[in-house]
Length: 260
Ligand SMILES: [Ca+2]
Image 1: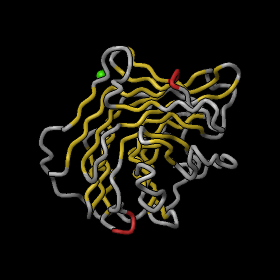
Image 2: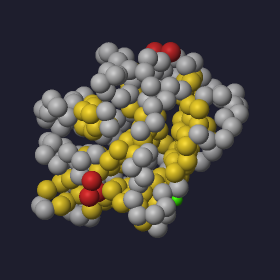
Image 3: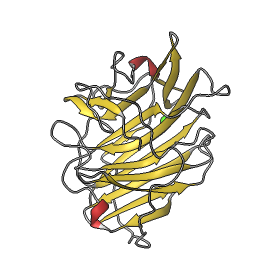
Image 4: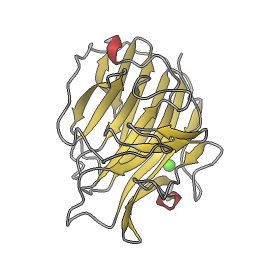
């Protein structure tokens, strides 16, 4: 994921990427815009687990996210301005509409309030085409109780490609921000279900019910903090003439499972 993502949780200022809300960032550097950093070795197929029933499900009905479950970012004065106006629920799906409001670029995101260590997260997601915007589904270690990048970050999917023809699974871990990513070639203007199983000895990514990659190298597996699911439509370099005023990311549903 790009190194300068800023967000917040109910607990207060938090850092997503490299900077906190309370300590505003320097330049927006959007690394890994196109190429894989490193493809960490896959450990082969993960054994099948029985995750049982989800401990949390949101089908996004009604007119807005349930605020008992979700914290909506609203930091209009930040260098990367995130605004609650970007968020709505419509036609049975969450929409995060990032783009031009009042002549400036604005972004949207929200984070699930449940903090879990190990589990499975499934998210049905798609996005509009639009260079300049990177819809992301990720697990984030909550500050101030956790520290980035030391406590890691697990990106189920990062849609870095404005054409939405490909996207990335992405891991960050350790004080040196070690990372690896894997390309997923799918048309993300259509619905896809992305998932991750996060266990102390293995991380497995899934797309549409099929394993895409599974790793067992402990170097890349966060083990030191709880995580929260975040849904964000983030900045990416750069808007072009074909980018619509607002670029939407859609989430049909979310399911969370505890470690069996
Ligand atoms: Ca739905």
